[in-house]
Length: 278
Image (cartoon, helix red, strand yellow):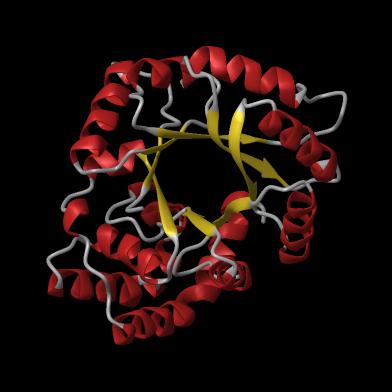
């Protein structure tokens, strides 16, 4: 799979048309995986889906009094997407994840969803979920985690997925904008931190140029070189050039990028903590 297009498009001028255009462009580039996380855009995605497309949804487990039941969530999504079955359901970690997993298994057996995956969960929980699923005669689809040059703490999960022939979907490819080609807000808010990341950004541009890729597509190629599937936001995808020509980076390219990223990781982590309170 080349990539997954996240169609969590915000409302705005011509936003419905942009979703249709973006999904059509993806098919032209032989990308048929779409991720519809937003409650507000699912019916628009349903209008744009073809029978050949694969669709995934995320379900965030919350406190019992706050959450909509998984059955109601899937029924509403099926209606909005005009589908009889959801291809992949992603369950996030929380104290309720085991209960939600059992609900998902029932929905799978009822024919309302095909496969089950996990979002941002610890490795030990991933292993436990896989064991529960195997006991019921089904298989874990994979794990979805934040993974990019500056955030590789889920490397153990990526390795485990590779060992068990499971999918690994990587999100936040551009490190919340710190690896984007231009982000005026970040450059004004964190000029010193962005300056410390310039060597990495320059190397991304240099390696990308060697393969006739942009800096952004090189960051995506890095994730693909790590045997992960990149999840690309629709807005970024429509601005991305040469996605169909993304090259497989050589091992020396990957190591050079990681070594350079490690030099700026501390500055990035500090900026992220200030920006998001992490």
